[in-house]
View (cartoon, rainbow, N blue to C red):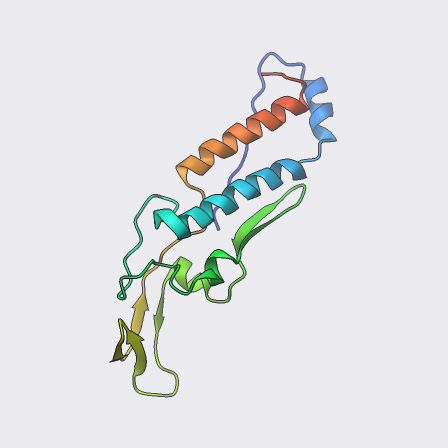
Length: 162
C-alpha cells in the first residue's frame, strides 16, 4: 500500500510553543481535505487522463471504448475516502476494482473456454489477461497539492510560523 508521510521541520520557532499547539491539534480536517484531493484526482484518472498515478498511460482495451469507464459508474462512483484524526484511506468499494488496479488472469471455472462479446462479435478464449491499470495512488501533482494544503494547515496551527 502506498503512503505519504508528512515531516515538519521548524526553524526559528520556540519548540515548546509549537509542540503545545500541535499536540492538541485536530488533524482530521487536514486529512479530510487531502482525502478530497485524492478522490478528485482518482476520478479524473478514470474519466479523463487514463493514466496511472506515476503518469504511465493505461493499456487500451480490445473494444476500443473508454478504458475503465465502459461499464459506466461502477468504478468511478465507488471512489471514496475515509478520514480520521490519524489516518486516511482512499480507494474503491466496487468488488472488481482490484482487478483493474492490479491486473488479473481470468480462466474458466466450469468450461474449457471463456465466451464473451467484443465489438459485437462472440469470442472464446482459454484465458484472458486484464492488464493492471492503476487508478488509486498519489501522483506528483497530488504530492504538490498535499504539500501546499498541509503547509497552509500547519501554518495556521502554529500561528503563522514559517
